[in-house]
Amino acid sequence: MALDERAFFTDKPETKQGRYTCPKCRRSGDYSIRWVRRIKKDRPPQGADEMDRKKFAKLRDYILRLDDEVVCKACGRKFEIPSQQSMMFVDQLDGLPKDEDLEKEIEAASEEPAKPAEPKPALGARFRQSSSNWK
Ligand SMILES: [Zn+2]
Image (cartoon, rainbow, N blue to C red; front, side, top):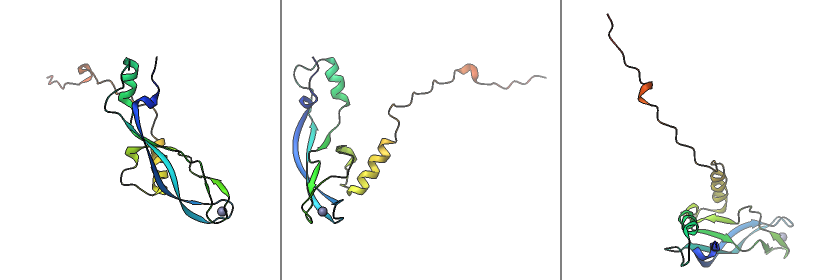
């Protein structure tokens, strides 16, 4: 039986500041958003089978946004956090860029092909041309 992904991680709650503009009153403000950081454990949990171990090897630390909406500080109305991204890999967060930079980074990352390119087969020696000196 496959293990739940949460068995591979240690959860650590954290809060991040984000600047959002209320779509109703158009005023922007800084909001504290709750996230949870999932830190990959040192080793696969007990009872992990071979599939679980393979899965574990591919995992990376990531953070997950828990809040989907905030209450506007100016008008008091709730609005959705206008970010599509509610999950990010921790290695994308190096240097704690601003949200705008982060969005760009995420965009750039999502443009990468989903599958790694197949390595090209090396050309065999028979394709190599040798020059000969015929007289
Ligand atoms: Zn508002």
